[in-house]
Amino acid sequence: MNENKKLPTLEELKGKYQPEELKDLTDEDILKIFEGVETVWDYNPTQIEKEEIPIDRYRNKVEYFKEGYFCDSFNADLFSLFLLRGEEKQVDKYQNIIQNDSFKEELVMRRSFVFDLVP
Image (tube, rainbow, N blue to C red):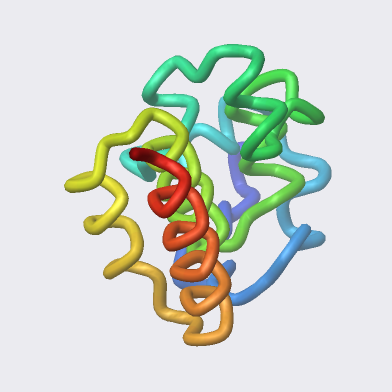
């Protein structure tokens, strides 16, 4: 990367999906921008979990950041991961973090359906 090129901040990317600002950056630059951002990749999802969430189209965390940046979607994916694992406290945590009301409503319905199936 050109040393003089300014990297976008997370705040500048907020609300953008597949931002143009990311497409030509190196993997190292992407990881710098998203340093400290929690994702499902931090929890070593199994292949089955990747397919169920679904994040299996991404080979790694860099592709995930580069092609799907949207903070609520990161949290929704974490919600889905912990829902699959049956970790209700974690599900609660990520449900409460999600800011988009219609997105949150959809996840609440999914949660109700999944936990209704568990005896």
